[in-house]
Structures are given as structure tokens and as C-alpha cells.
Length: 263
Image (cartoon, rainbow, N blue to C red):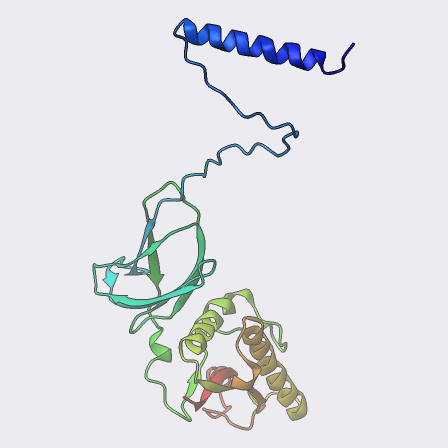
């Protein structure tokens, strides 16, 4: 058989069928069909998740005890967004910023007559529209106001076990106020001075006063105060504020002071 015969027959049949269709009024569309296999990957339409809603973040300051509004200055760092915001608010008003995503905020608040505050907040509310924060401000202890160079201030509420340099728990409140005073005044350098009465061996008294000063210094450095800002010093019974002639006067001489070296 002629090898071309099948092809000729197929061509003839296509010709006849096409002409027949045309004769019957049927529209015929011709397609070019590639002889090569088609390769590739079908990619579905990507559907993006809805973007988080903008978050209106507001902060205002209030007095810790009275809850009254306090005018304040703010510095806010958005850690993930790598942005900083600086502003202020009058009493009864808020400082507002807009966040575009969940973020970690470092909020620093300052107000005249109050200790500075620094708080870390995790704002995780992609579906909420606003977030309000209260900065609760503690008024500066009157002992630590109007500081002057060479001024010596007695820490009345710092207590140790008898003849020991072990701090008693009730000292924490006073030491916390000293810590806040130092953090609120970054240029403040102080001497932590330990004193005793004249009872007992003078060398032991001096050693005791030095150790007590170091314990307080360690408390502050453990909280993050730079060592260079603190000078522990023990004087023993060398600097009495009263004669050591009565028990009350001896009690006055057993003390810890902080002395302002630099502001």
C-alpha cells in the first residue's frame, strides 16, 4: 500500500466534512494546535490577608494617689516599626499617635514634681481601633527636692539588723525612692555615707559603716544605676551629728546619708 494513502484519505475526509458544514450554514473555527507538549505550573490567584487596622494609641498621666490628671511629656519608641514619637499633654488631655501594626512600645513619661516612669507595653490588637494607657505618676519625696551640691540628706527609713550590714525589708521603700531620684536626674552623682555611734571598737565601727554603704550602693547598681555615679564611704563614729551622751543622740548618729557630689 502506498504509505501516503492514509494521509490522503484523512485530508479528503476533512475537506468533505468542512465543505458540508459550510454548505449547511455552520461556522467553523480553526485552531493551531502545538505539537510540542506544554509544561508549567498552574498558579492560583493569591489572596492577601486583610491588613491590620490602624491603632490610635493614647497616653495621659495621672497622680498615683489623687488620680488627678497631670501635664506631662512623653517619649514613645515603637520597637518593631523603628519609630520614635515625642510629645506632651496638658492636664486632662492625652498624647496620641497612630500605630499601623502590633508593636512593642517603650513609653517614657516625665512630669514636674514626679518621678520619671518607663514602661514596656505590648500592643497586640490588630482588630481594635484604639488603645488607651494611663501613666501613673508618683510624686517626688520632699526629701529629694531642691538638691544642692554638698548637701547631705539622711535616709531615715533605711534599717539594718543590729550590728550588721544586712538590710531589713522595710528599707526597700526608701531605697526605691533614692533609685527613682537618681534615674530622674541622670547627672546626679552621690556619696553613700555610713555612720555609727561611738559604742564599741572604732575599727569595727568604721568597717561596719563601710559595709552598710556598699550594700546600698550594690542595691542601686543592681537596679541599673552606673557605678561611676555612686561613691560608698564609711566614716564610723568620726562625724557625729549629736553628742554620744544619750541613747537618743546615739540613735541619731547611727545613720546613712547620701551626699550630693554633682548635679
